Image (cartoon, rainbow, N blue to C red):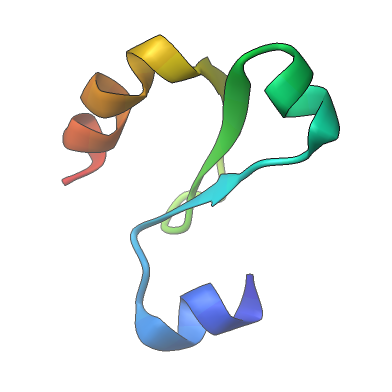
Length: 51
């Protein structure tokens, strides 16, 4: 997360074994700090909304 802040990343995807088991990722909005689980098939529109 520190590196993402340093490079000015808008969002970070957090992928761990639990998320993969649910076919999902955690999406963190680096501006607001909000974090939510997003199913992989729905990831693209969530990322587009952050752009």
